[in-house]
Image (tube, rainbow, N blue to C red):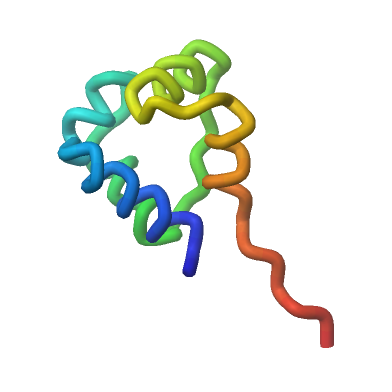
Length: 75
């Protein structure tokens, strides 16, 4: 499962909308949608990272693990 899907699953489990997450960290809901669809990886300031951890009730390490891009198998 992609990190975007995991992010979306956690957000929905917490009963949060994309807009609520976006407003909490100062980005647009389209940005959150792009993360969830794997269009872009989050590029957050330290303050945004702290707010996202608080919003999702995660530690920084848990957030890093959640957003870590999937490693592609080597050919």
